[in-house]
Image (tube, rainbow, N blue to C red; front, side):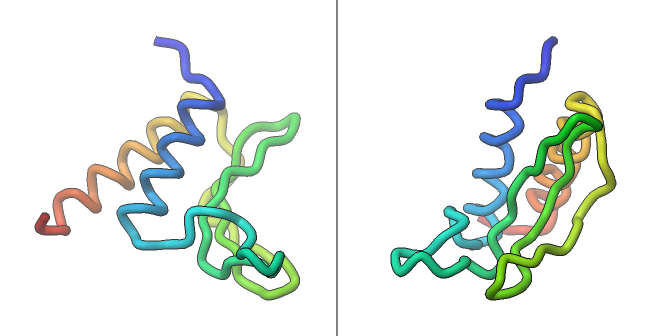
Length: 87
């Protein structure tokens, strides 16, 4: 099955919801939402990042991965959270 950028963003959106993180990168006052998890894409692949500073600095939560590798990475994170969180 083909992995799409939109599908990866959907998984990141779910990750933010499950972890009770801000769902958007910016707050209503245009400040950075600390703790927001986002997906960065460049010519070498995808990287999962967390907003760590008020100036927009980020912590890297993954190395740079292909779309397929990121799909597996995110699915593993969500599965692991699902095993530990009682709903």
